[in-house]
Length: 203
Image (cartoon, rainbow, N blue to C red; front, side, top):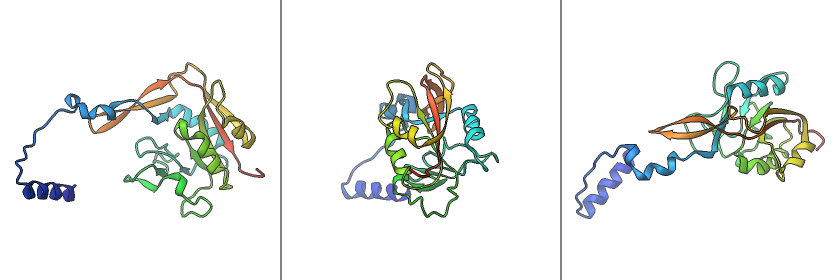
């Protein structure tokens, strides 16, 4: 931020400009509009649903790593701390950027029981990518009909399936929206949600 301020100052000096700053409340700033839209890319599901997933698929130990998350929607471990996680861009608690460029076969992180809740549009690419790493993982995906193209693949790969929400359930998936500089999550998606346990053996 300091470097950007210096660059801005230099532009003003070089062009002999007069720059005046004024405060515009966020709710009156039209430029903030796009950041306030509810986004299907930044969803999370309820603590109750997460407890169901942990109880059903934690195996001999709890889930150890969240493969796709933001700092604000990563799931919590049994110790109450946010699971280590990869993020789409740099952030204070990120353990790596962009799942698709990570080498999951050799990692300094504990990936013994991975968990991933991908954006709906990336469910297919994520399942295909993870099928190559030969490590067990749990994923949460939208159900409903008609079935998506990736559904048969997950059914072949999985050892167990858990229904987390039926059609019309508004209390499982939460959408994010911006409030000032922070984000909040509100109930929104009335969609069927399923969780799959993938052992990644003999595929």
